[in-house]
Length: 120
Image 1 (cartoon, rainbow, N blue to C red):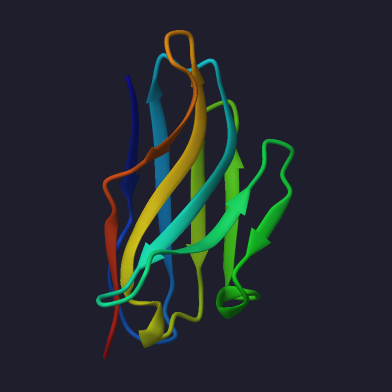
Image 2: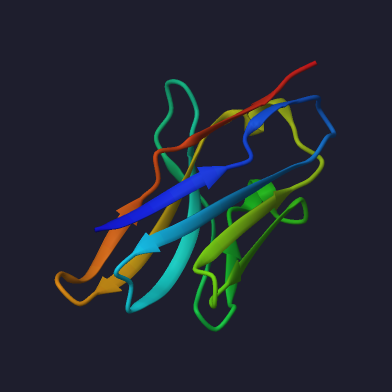
């Protein structure tokens, strides 16, 4: 059983910063790509950023230059540093990872989501 647990969401004023963290736990052999998605009310879930095991990153255009994704392979964690936040960044943010386990092989997993609200 694999669990992804997010933390770090909350309410912040426009221009502020938040740092999201996600920790994977369970019978993990390896983790491939890890990423963050978000879903705003009435909108589809979108990929925000992802990072490969080797550290290659990719960002959606709307967050480039403001968000930074990082990971700690030894601790099975991924983080999203969000700076210069805008009201349009308001959404539920989800951690996602491709995790390999002895019993089930490689599967995609989601966290439960953490709310980020940018408002004055």
